[in-house]
Image 1 (spheres, rainbow, N blue to C red):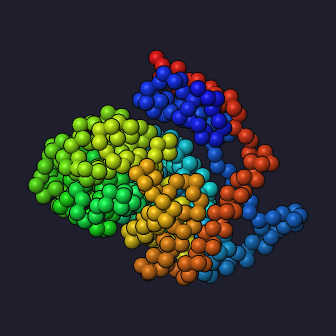
Image 2: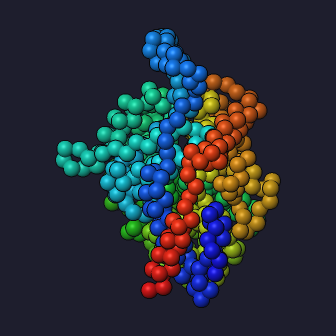
Image 3: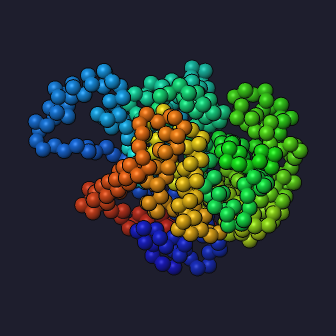
Length: 485
């Protein structure tokens, strides 16, 4: 049993030798939660605002503020597009949530989402060179209901201050109405990362997984467990990328989606689910065990496990099956159990297992690409372009069954992804500004390098304090005690 390292690189080796694989998996989850709480408490969150312009002397406040800044106000008044160049708007994202569907925890109240939204802002800056601010809002109306129109109005009002909006952790069906309305009503990109982001990264992983098992997307049988914003959007994007709708079966909490689901047809708020009811599962198979039998791919974004997906279901799948079990914080089945049951490739949403299919590979580069060309929206084609970019990057550096997709520490992937997305935005006619691929790549790389170097300099000079070793040790000790009970 090793002493835990500050960079957590030896997390698999710090638990007692007599722990089973299941105990280690559980202990890692408990450890990470314990450490998250103590580290957030120690630092008081993880995001701050710092200037990016110098202060050679206090008289410069007359330039950065009044009276000089009056010229900036009137210039933007006369041409609103100047706001993208004379302020930080062109590189600023609002991360908006009503915190009603946070991870696997559900409705955590509006301020309960701040940890996740600040985390989103943290990753945008470090991975994509994008500034972002967390905005958790109360969407409750006078009747005590969660009202999507309140989020819609809020985003429409804030868009003059931001270059893009990242919607996050909004429960369905409200998330569908919020996204689809704002994509059309706003002059800046409005992106729902739980839906489009998850779909883009899932497609990237599936593209390479299919290369490894030598199968074509138009011929495979796909079973989905869960019919929320993530899986419904994944299905839509996979179909756009070539998957055959009649080879898809999706299950919600009741049964499978098919054209006889009157309960979905009559609930107009679930129109995205109804679209899939009409396209998929023509034989109306309603038993999950029957549906997954012979499937090439399982994509699960449903109830956290580890017993949500049964080993016998995976054993009944086709040869060289691909299993994406991406519930957080615990996958529907642990990867070792899925492999034991016969899965050839297993992916989860967690970085402590192989093949992390995580939005963090998508949204920093996608939003950076959209911002660089001042895009008005993020199209499905842009999301597919990001997926192909991620897949190609991984393929060029080498892929295998336990390494189908880039990792977050592969910094070179993000400027490439941003440039590919920017080019697709221009091609789709939603860009205000034209750049060449090289121009976009160089700009994205410069901004990403700046963000990383800034963080590292703050750490080196102790403006960001080092993580105290005792936080790690206490979190580990607590996890071992809890799992040993």
